[in-house]
Length: 302
Ligand code: UTP
Picture 1 (cartoon, protein in one colour):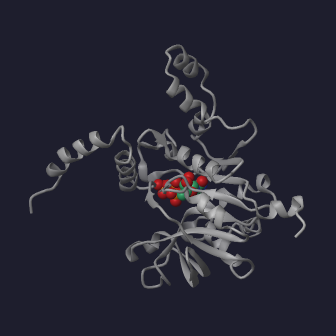
Picture 2 (spheres, rainbow, N blue to C red; picture 1 turned 90 degrees about the vertical axis):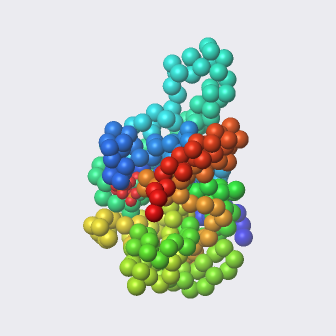
Picture 3 (tube, rainbow, N blue to C red; picture 1 turned 90 degrees about the horizontal axis):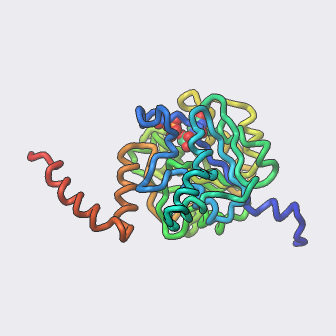
C-alpha cells in the first residue's frame, strides 16, 4: 500500500481524550473543591498516571474535557514558577525534575469545558472538533491500571483499525456496573465483540467480560453521539454510541495484562495505594510494618 498522510492518520493513534468532567459524588466531601482525578495514589494524582500511560503509548496530543472546579488539573500540568525557583534554590534537584517532567510540549495539551456533566458519552463528544477524522484514545483516570507494559501501549500495539476496548472479567454480582460484552470469538488477548449490553442484571448478562476505561475509537462515534440519546441513569452513555459500530467495522475487546483498581470507589483507591506502596522500595517496609500493626486490631472477634 502506498503510504500517504491520509492512511497514516487512519491507523496511528496520536490523540487522547481524558474525560474529567464528572462530579465524583462517591468521594464527597473530598471532591467538593478538588477534582476526583487529583486524588493521589501514594504521591501522584490519578490523572498524572493516565497522562504518563498515554505518553508511553505514543500519544502526542492530550485533550482534557473538564468542568467547573477542575482548574487544579490545568495547574498540575503547568509551570509553578515560585515552587520551581524555590526547589532550585534549595538544591532539591530530584523534586525539581519531577515537576519539570509534567510539562508537555507547548500546544500539545488542550482543555475543553463540558458545561454540564451529562455523561461519559457527552464528555467525549465535547472533544469532537479537536479529534477530527482519525482514531483516538480515551482514558478514564479513575480506572487505574497497574501493568508491566502500560495498558494503552498494549492496546495501541495490537490495534489495526476500528474500535478496541479494554476488557476484564468481573464478578457476576458486579456486571450491572459495566458495559458487558457478548463474545463472538476469542483469539489470544483479543475478543471479537458481537454486542455490548450497558449495565445488565446478572441474569441478563451475556458474559462477565466488562469494558474498562481504556478505549481506542474510530471518529465515526461522533455521528452516533451527535444524537445525544440518553441511556442508563439518564446519561449520554459512550457504550450506547459504540453499539451501532459493531456491525460496521472491526470491534475488539483487549484482555490487558495488569491489575485494574476502581479508583472511582474508596476501597479501590485505598487498594491501589497499598499495592503501589508495597512495590516501592522506599515505602515497602514502612507500609508492611504499619499494616501488620493495624490489621490485627481491625479484625473483630467473632
Ligand atoms: P463516573 O461514572 O465515575 O462519574 O465517570 P463521576 O461523576 O466522575 O463520579 P461519581 O459516580 O459521581 O462518584 C467516569 C469518568 O467519566 C468522567 C468522569 O470524570 C470519570 O473520569 N465523566 C463522567 C465526565 O467527564 N463527564 C460526565 O458527565 C460524566
